[in-house]
Amino acid sequence: MPATYIDKPSDKAFGEFEARCEACKARLRQEDFLHNRGLGNEVGIYTFCYDPRLKNRVRCFFDKLKADPSLPCNIREENLYDILLEICEEKHIAAAIPRREAKKGQAQMLKQLSAVASPEAFAKKIADRPNRPGDVILITGVGEVYPFMRAHNILDNIQHLFEETPVIVAYPGRFNGQTLSLFGRLCDGNYYRAFDLI
Image 1: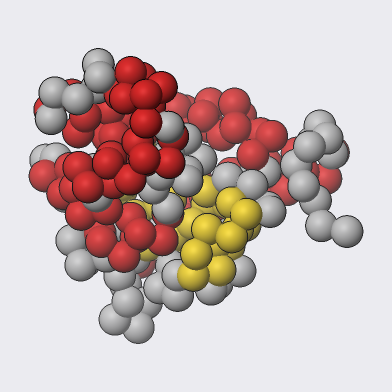
Image 2 (image 1 turned 180 degrees about the vertical axis):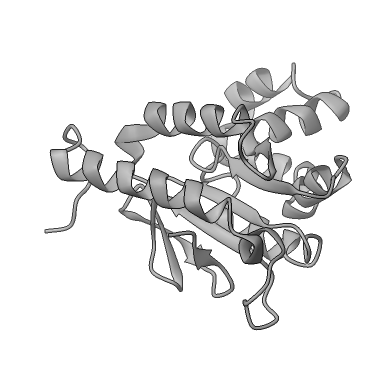
């Protein structure tokens, strides 16, 4: 029976996570990875999948990476939930959302938000930030914006924007090379152009 991430993480889950962290650090030091080489003309979009029960450890791991002066790259984090709030603030609708949701219901509110905070709007926010040579973009907050925003929709809209910059998606679930499975149980859509980081 597949894991459903309800129980506390097993020793195996901790061990796999630690191994993935070490492998991730090694990849961030590879010249081919940092320059998107050896991908057969594909854009360098990678998934760093993890057991959602380890989200605090994941956050700590990426905080350490961002502050590590020994890395030959700069980790630029883009949190999807923060981007959603930023878009809503700019459209002057953030304060009204709780009232509208209470009045019209969650489904109607999500539909209205989708018109304002589209996948294209998320992608534009990420692409409009200053991008320096040596940057690696880290996308977090995937679980926080589900089901409003799906990971494959974001990836579809950023792939043409970062042809020379590696993108890592911190993904709380599984990716088998074709299908994204959020939390290990929810189908989050198909995406064929990403690579597992490890």
